[in-house]
Amino acid sequence: MVMATRWPSKCHALRRPDTCDSGSSSAQSHAEQFFAVHRDNPSPEVRADACLVEVADSALHVQHQVAEKHRPLAEKILEGIPAGHRQETLQWLLQAFDVMHFNDSLVFDAALVLDRYYARGQADENPAAAQRILLASVCTALKTGSPVEMQLPLKQMVMHLGRDQVPFDEVLVAELNMLRKLKFHVGTPTARDFMEGMWARMEKDWASEPCWYLADFLLQLTIIDAPLYFKFPHAILASSCLTLALQSTRAPQLAYSSVLDDLALHFHDDVPPRQALLDCMQRVHQHWTDCLATEANTFVAHLCKKFSYPKRHWVSSYEPPAAFAGRLKVSVSSRMG
Image (cartoon, rainbow, N blue to C red; front, side, top):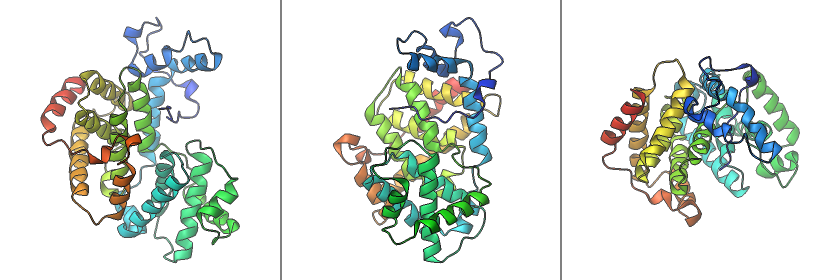
């Protein structure tokens, strides 16, 4: 897994006041230790990552602040686009990006741009206009989101996704209008960015592919429920999906500690997220249970099929843990209490 955390601009000016200069790993946070191990790497490119030790903790906190600043309200989103239309749009993104073999992070990038756009007002109900907006969000995600190796130039890629039915110039006009409506604030951190960063730092000490794919499955499952997906900070939602996956794959205590330590860094001196984390886990667990019991939902059916293959360790066949709250509450309380 490659860490895809988006470090805020000017992060070189950020530093946690209580960081110790001694270089001792015992005085460093888990995030700082993640970068410190590269100090003696023979590769200059890899060794350069060690420079981030000085800003790691502060950058994570700023990443959380930026995400919170641009996190839309679910009720505003659903005023701009009905829940049914939003689910159809997300299903198209999921299926189209799977066919193109794009990184799953791009689904979250494009979806967040769309949700933020619709949260700013009622959109044109004209199907042609909706299609232009959708392709505009894809265009923006491909430019600003997670790096992707495209087999075709951007214009041909977007035209192909639109089945050559929407002129590229019209897509660019729609994209410019979208950017103006968002005041050109795009590329903001998504819940997937937080989860990838947490996993990369946890993977240094403990790794389990089934755990990662199950967490990814749960996070993608939550995106269709706007009131759930946007109720909690992205860092909380990402941690909840990871923690539930840890529980389902019987991970060691070390893995829980890594996630919880990382989560605390995002909030820094803000209100401790312990209760929010527990509430979010309960909501995600209930959503997971409800989705698996619903056969008619085409988005869920496609997602379950996507995660039913050996390369993703058949994680969609996992059953939600029947009694998870007690163990997790003790674990969370002991680390964050």
